[in-house]
Length: 256
Image (cartoon, rainbow, N blue to C red; front, side, top):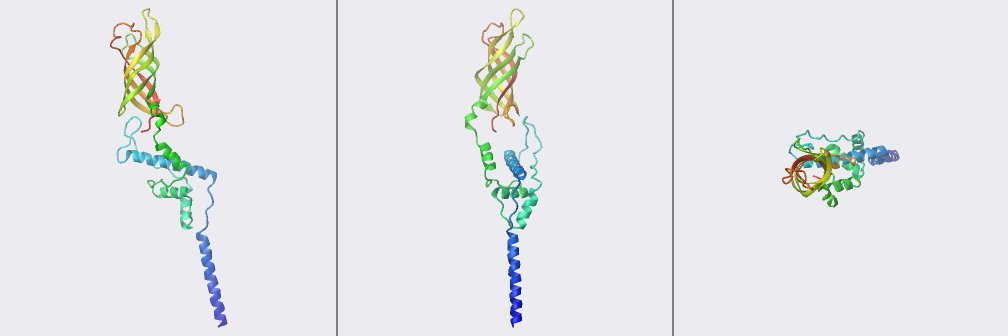
């Protein structure tokens, strides 16, 4: 009987020891991310947030580029090469990851999965990007004009620099007024040229978003078609009805 008892105790010890080892293995924590991995994960999560906004914008409609043309859909950003393996190790070891890594693993399986639980700084940046900027809404209507010219080759006028403010948006078109101002180079009676001031009123057509002052596309390029009246009124016939001119302008990019 004593030998049987020893055998039973030894068996229980082996079983309990195995259970403890197995439990310890189930709760093994993964190594922390390296600085490079952390940076790669943050960059990818920001790219995924941008991609999801892109998908939500176009839905089931054809996607279009900055010129309004139908364009191929943007692909899902590729995750970091090490992420899938880390997610699989965490699942096998029943290890809880931090909320950011948990969201990343969910996105690997389903790129359209919700990112609402994503903590700062990525979620904060995402919300800030989606929030309308009320302080610069007026500035997006202020255009800086340049490279203007008359449509006719006779007595050609050149618009050097100026400004106007758009009032009404109709798709890609903007109507501007009150009249903008434009510094002009115009011919004079002696066959030379002089500088004078003109007033503009017409239409702006959005061409494309461009990058000028920042790392992203922060400005919008427009083509303008306008009537221009000369301030002095001494340029002869046609002054009262204005001159037809066209040229370009830029304005701060409006979030759409």
